[in-house]
Length: 487
Picture 1 (tube, rainbow, N blue to C red):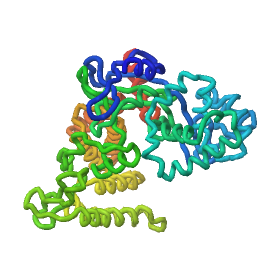
Picture 2 (picture 1 turned 135 degrees about the vertical axis):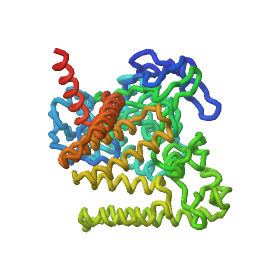
Picture 3 (picture 1 turned 135 degrees about the horizontal axis):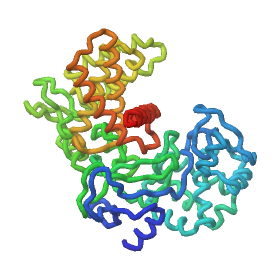
Picture 4 (picture 1 turned 45 degrees about the horizontal axis):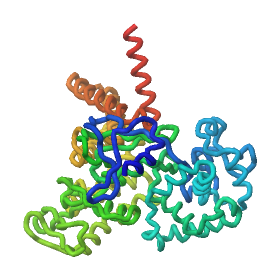
């Protein structure tokens, strides 16, 4: 294991605080080599390869994956058929070079997004043979994926294209070898920017999953990853990241992990039917208004859902039908292009009033999602009443997140929610000022919340490539004001 870790840690930018071990129930994984404090850097790594996601479309920047819909693209200077968003992007990322140009020119198939990233991996065979060997150490889930529609498509969209137009690139390789590359990319790649660019990291790919992880990934503008501790990690403890969004319920997470990562999660959250008391999957009992819950989400031999108060029980099928009915009503309202904004708000608020607390708990995932969509629609309305509604919903999401992960646990989502809270607090203060009703108590209370939400969101997001530009502007303004006040 020591020699394997030496191979996989070759792209680390500095010594890590982790080492590769064979875990008891999750295969290979990283454990802490020392006591790690919250916000400590565990490792920083450069990608082995970066490339566009499949199905982004034929027109995208070959360096940053920006699609045509997000900007004006220019032809590659060497006329290979690929596009660039700017000369600056080419200088910054340098993912597309002259050798790649020469290869791409030979390919008459213009579905570049389907095969370009695989082409970049194949180039490692000759240009960086050691990295090529290390890339192939990664899990491919080839057996699990044989009947997967994506893998069937890859045989024609990737293997057939590259084998036909670039036989020298795949010389000595079989169709299965190239399908293994596709499998490794799908199983191990990280989305490293807002356009969905896929990045493969050797060491970071060894970090196992936990729905309540103790570490998080931060990607910078160059596509490098830094793994930071979300909370204190003791020496010898396994380091974990979350492969799913934390504010999704257990059934959704288990289904996603089984379909995309081919394992059933047995973390503490997945084994707790109450989901740490958030009841994001529960249904309201029709008899006593308690919570209907299954004994287990992952064990199909326990199909019934039982009330936690009156012992009334029902079947999983009936629960699914009930939740789907609410979900379908909600999706129908959101997706209706003929509904005006005010009508949409009225319909969503009506659905929320009818179903929240009577059919589903206020913190059920469907209800939380519905409320978030309402917030996004309310954003166009700067009236104080609308601001207060949005603030209440965002604060609720922060509370649910804190119940799940703990008050002192960092996360990217927490950073975004806190910055959204900050902006709403600013809007609330402005609204109170317009009404001449901002008193001393409000000023003190809201001002304190304002400072905490801004400071914490900046700490969590400033080094993240997805950091909101407005947060950078606000922090720059604060720093300028501090400098002026100190001179």
